[in-house]
Image (tube, rainbow, N blue to C red):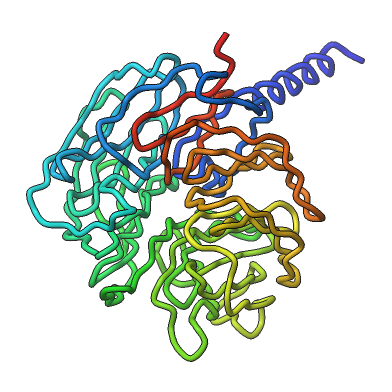
Length: 414
């Protein structure tokens, strides 16, 4: 082999090794918004006393996940019964707090006993961190914690609270603002918070709304914003918000389903959307235009197996979580190939290579193989006495678990 070719081969090998060892987790559900990481060297086994690099105390409960960029971890926190809403920056190696930026909220905002005032996760592009504090607004900071801009989008008030996280695409930050009596998706310039577009408002009410975080997905033909709405899943143009396609099917038999909890799952071939809480689910072929209900919808299940947490797509199969099971679904047919009881789990599934990670409410994380023919458990790890409704986060060779009292960093503690 010639020296130039040898050098090129070494560069590629080093790049592949680096990818396997380290990856940022810049947003809710990671760099793709689909719960997948390029890392494969992640912990398999741990406990409250084994393979814990560090843990820090948290002042109050929270359902949001941390995000990780380089040497720093960013986490939302709410205290004083939601009157103080904060963004923390932590040292990734030690958990020590680097800075803490808070905003005050003196209004009234409803919440459910299982939700918190910090359910939305922050997002970063390595230059800024953007956080949604519900009725307390959308806020942008630089990486040192300096305020760049703040945006008051009005009240975000629902009997079960809010949860959708902001996402970043090129020069835009996009947010599902809701659920509320008037809900919408809005795109703002990430540099200054100026509004670029918003979807038409839809009127909600008690027991009506979507908690879905939008997904920015490359379907092979185009990059679009995919969003699950009550009764329907849609693809939106990222620059204008215009609806590119839509598929009905998330409504209940005989009427519209009022609830949509989960984020859609998108690959180059499929879109999987579920209403949650025993509602319907659909699988749709990508690449359509207009109303694709009759042309691109592959199947519809009147009662889907997904409630709160979002799943992952691996090939032609979706792995999704429900209470009290995790299931594998053939996206070509809608057939369920296996089901395994896991207990109450509101966290979302994370994929790392051929491993899938799912954390239940009792802080027990099951690691199982991404195999469509049968459930194969690789490990079961429990943080005794802990409670969590957040999702596990992989980054830079470590795993981060937010419980109601602590943030844990799981890794090789040596």
